[in-house]
Length: 417
Image 1 (tube, rainbow, N blue to C red):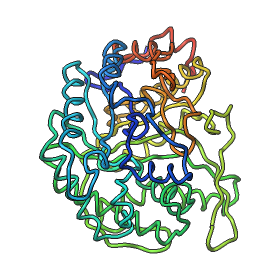
Image 2: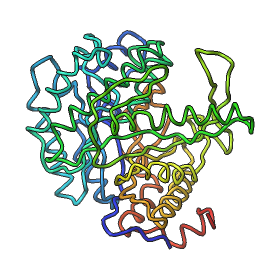
Image 3: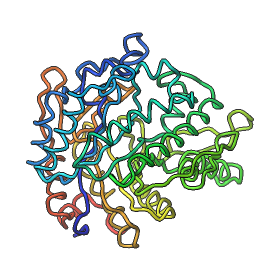
């Protein structure tokens, strides 16, 4: 049996655009209407059905819920907040607390208000005053939540939007990407100054586990370089005031963090490339059967990530960890094996305070649309009926009891780790 400490949060995670539906004020909606992205439509219709979603959480035994505010929903027009939307988000927090479910709030989970995006978004430092207004609105109107994350996966946002050009605004410009990343650090500093004291303020970083493609010195160096750039450079910038981007170093306001969230999904192989503009190539490490996202499963990577992030001497939360698959037995195995490694980190004295499975329900998976199924709860996108999978009940028992039973370990576990 693996017992987690009293107060350890075992919950689930979602984001607003992926589940709410009807976010017509978002830049993702704007680009979907232009045919550049799969339309989200009503998504899971959770803006209307949030009470049912929370009812499921309570029935299943989940102890915490990470979700996000849709900036465009509370600021559909520049300078004109939507008080009704703010009240709905406050109502979600109140209902979570009434059901004994600890809320964790994220302020930016990839999407922007369309009006902000059309002004240049985070490319332009002068636009940070609009971000300031949004954060002040949250600080003045939201209560009943302790844990607030400023940004979800800021480096993913910078890379997917400005290096790979897969996400809005579909640019391929590494110089612009690092400027955006620097401005996100500045935005975090603004938010930390406003929010710290009323809330415990953190940030959520995706941390892939990078390995060299071979034992060659060049591949090892490439893996170390991308690990620093993708996994640590923004955190170091927040803490020190110096952000080392892809090509340049930026002075940014040193601020702080009260906690650090880590999202962990996959293991990636890195190969050095003789090209000054693209110094390395990355691909799935191909160490296991692939998920429906094309990712290998490597449970030890969650432990390696927590160990690496423990160097920042902050309370840590696994803010996302999940699998896209229709094989629900595999989902149960995935959860059990990753929790084994979270427990190992705890045994070694690493200050981990929670684990949030991604996702509570099937949802809109960004540029992948509705095909990948991450949810503990299945969603019928035609009727919006929710149906808990077996994994939802198994994880609920883990959350209620604060432990992974010997029976689960024997059936799904890795044995000695």
